[in-house]
Structures are given as structure tokens and as C-alpha cells.
Image 1 (spheres, rainbow, N blue to C red):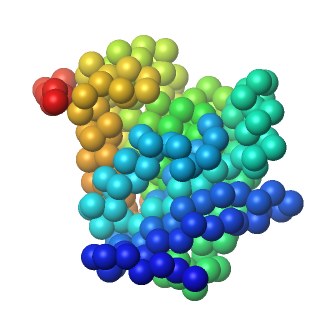
Image 2 (image 1 turned 90 degrees about the vertical axis):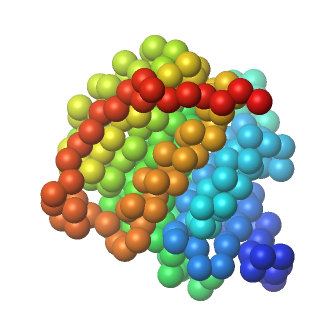
Length: 249
């Protein structure tokens, strides 16, 4: 059963079966949500992913539904703590994301919502790869510090509106995302570089800026089913937000 919370928000802790894997998730749907954002995790239980849960909260404040989903089973996560094998297997993670997408499209609670992906680091790479597998189902994708080097040949098939966000002090990831940006054929793509931010975006105000940019992107592209043909006049942009001030608390 779905739990009705205050302020007309529905929340459900759930388990989604993808193949033989049972994946832990948390689904939260504000009233009149403008779309639903899939936010994958691979580092353990989503209950302890405090920064990711805070980020999802920022998206919901802007009127987006969210589903935080662990792409690894409990057994895989335990093995991954030692080997790091699963988190770098981008195709494995992307296949799980595709399964989650199919579930959202069939579930009566979510099937009316346009779908977006948000992923960070390896999960950002998985989100981009999964979007190439479901181009008619995923309306927008945002990658924060995405490991695009782990699957770069597939970027030439990415036509989903794509926002790449990188920290200004994360020089290796800037380089790989610049390369990825040039390979993506979508007419709706943008690269944003947030000054003074590192790969994990732990700096004060950095994560909030990521949420602001992501919210803008999702709101723009999830209003209706999106393809490149939907916005023929839009152009690709590459932005370094040099004037951005990161707030200190």
C-alpha cells in the first residue's frame, strides 16, 4: 500500500524485481508531479545515502517525483565493497536501470509520468547508457561527474536531451565529459561546469546548484514526451558558470 503523507505526497518503500534481482527502492510522488526522476545508487542501502536523499528532496521541492533505487542486490553490494567490480560494470548497471524504467511504465501509479534519469559518477555513466536503450521512454537525463569513459562508443547513439554537470576543480572528469559532449548527437545537450566544486560536490552550495540545474533541465524536457524533433530550434551549449557564487553556510 502507498502511504499518504502530509502535503499530498505519496511515499512507498518497495522492492522491484529485475530479472532475478530484487532491488530496494523508495518512491515519493508529490501531487501534480511534473515527471519522475530515477536516481540510482550502488554504494549500499538507500536509507543511509543521506546526500542522495537530500538531493531527491530538492527535486521534489520543485514538483518532481523521485524514485531512489539501489541497482545492486544486497549480496552484490557486499561483494562490491571489496572488489568494486559491480559499480564499474556500466552495462550491468544500465540493464538494471532499463528494467526499472519498464516497471515505471507499467505501474498504474507512475505510468502517466514522464521519466528522467539522474546519475552521479559511475551511475551517471549508467544513466546515459540506459537512455540509449530506451530513447522513446526517457525524456531527459542529467549526469553529475559521469564516468563517460567506461562506455564512450555508445554515446554516438544518445539522442535523449542530456545535461552533463562537472565540478570546476575536477579536471580529469571535465576532460572526459568534454569528449562525451562532442560525441553525443542529440540537438538538446548542455555541459555545465560549476566552479570551485570537486568530484563529490561536497563544497557548501555545490549540491544545491546541481539540483537547481537539474530541476531546470527536467522541467524543460519532461513536460511532454521528448525527442530531438520536438525542439528543432534548440541548440547545444557548453557553459562554464564562471560567475556562479557558491554560498557558504
